[in-house]
Amino acid sequence: MNGQVKHFDTTKNGDEVLIYTLQSRDGASVKILNYGGIIQSLWVPDKNGVMRDVVLGYDRIAGYEENPGYLGAMIGRFANRIRAGKFTLNGKEYRLAVNDKENHLHGGTVGFNAKIWQTDDFSEQSLTLSLLSPDGEEGYPGNLKVTVRYDWSDAHALTLTYHAETDADTIVNLTNHSYFNLNGQESGSALGHMVQICSDRYTENDSTGCPNGTISPVEGTPLDLREWRQVGERIDEDFPQLTMPGGYDHNRVLDGTRLVTAARLYAPESGILMVTETDQPGMQFYSGNYVPHVVGKAGAVYDKRHGLCFETQGYPNAMEHPHFPSPVVSPEKPYHHVTVYRFSASGQLPD
Image (cartoon, rainbow, N blue to C red; front, side):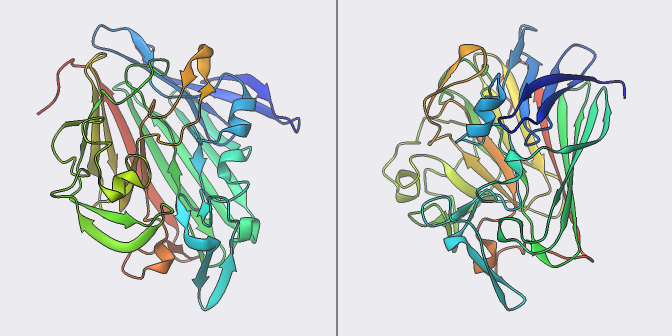
């Protein structure tokens, strides 16, 4: 192994947490913890060549053990919400933890974000972490072996390759919950960023944030971000799908069969552009509406809307709605998806 690995901290249970650094030739880097598969920092050059850390996070493991906003974490076994914490598979009802009002959220009480992952492979620009989720953990059926590979390129592209295999039918929905602020993690509100979401439909939410089964067009609504818009331009408009979650927090409908551009984010101040590509059928664009007032890295103060999430995923609450893409995996049908975050800094808003 030729990459850099160091001791990061020790959990309250006494487990050692390691931090791995993937680095490009010009010094741009991404740092990843074996706790929660967390992206702890991501340094890329701005339009003047100055490195900026563009993800929110913490300097000590205690922040990640609390981590009410799931900053930087790998989410599983099922990302996002499942209504009432239950689903039916092959005629049997499974009951999960209810940890978000009346719904199940992000894998339950102790999800993948709070686990020590095994290191399978590590080099200067690649890291593979794995986790075994036993049958019955958090109420899910089947023994599930999960691997996530992080690849960092000299062109400043971070590729996340998700793979999961099971010995029994189960449901899987994996994502990464990084909050991006392209002016730097310490720079406050992200509402001045420009965003473009390459999707013309979204899944409507009920009052608890859980999809109600309706797939609606974005046209004619404040959720229409197909053309470049400032994030804060319409975020507080009087539109029920915005007012219920206090901003953007919706699953956007994507192709789901091939790698496509799902979103682009640009910060005029830094000149940094981030392009999100995925072969997932959905992406949750979340404007950090519920981020609590906390102290993050280097004493930075985080608050509501200080970071933006692009959570590539399967549809939330998919088992309740047969017309949604199925999240069921089986011994014959493993889970495999790829997401890429590409960074550049031309200093100009792309066409």
